[in-house]
Image (cartoon, rainbow, N blue to C red):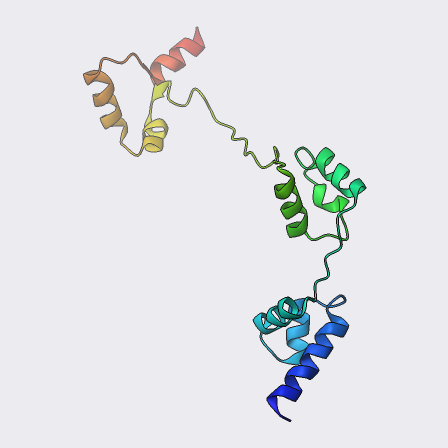
Length: 148
């Protein structure tokens, strides 16, 4: 079988199955690279995109920024499609902002833990504090204050 005949058969198979199978599935079935399937689909206009409805756009606008499960609201759309549409609409996700829990008093005392967080020894931290005349509490002072 010549390359042209084989290519035509592959194109016909892709045309008949691209809506039901992923690029990876098509490539495996036809024993060709995924990039070849992508090339055929792009060249021949085989796209399985369906336009966004007004209801879908409204639902996306209402839920994208605050709902962590927004992708579940669109079972017929891939996560990438939802993100692409949201980007096109200029929507941002608040839930992507990481919220860190931190101990704001970790540096109130000079100890091994607070010094190691800075990447230095407790002795060096103590010397730095003394040279720069910074007020601090030691673990002993903190313990004494807690006992009072």
